[in-house]
Image (tube, rainbow, N blue to C red; front, side):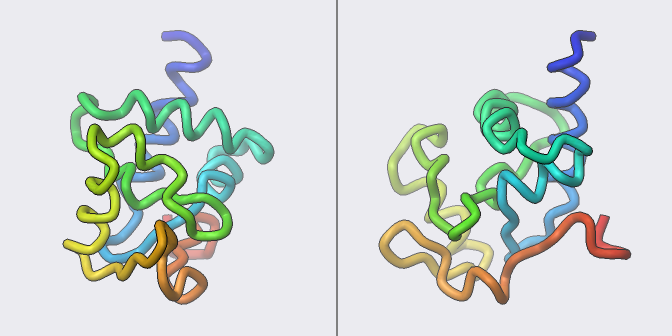
Amino acid sequence: MSANGDFFELVYDICRHIPRGRVTSYGAVARAAGAAGAARMVGWALNKSGKVLPAVPAHRVVNRMGFLTGKAAFGSPDMMRKLLEDEGVKVENDRVVDFEKLFWDPLVLGEL
């Protein structure tokens, strides 16, 4: 497997730990993967995660301000919002309401 493939698999594993009803950021996933500064690479990995099994809850990863910047990867402009709202996450103007409260940090002891 390529280095990108290994990194992508690590990203997928981290994202599978994000609890339902919580969100994290591309940067937080990158830091947890040992690649601080690789937030864009996390985005590329998640963009390719649609057919990966076990499923990757990519809809739970947003930008550092809580905006749904990856929503175009979900096939419809409203799908990412709908998936989050189905888990109880409120979204207004493409931003997670109470982002700081719902933020899940994979590096916090006991989180990952």
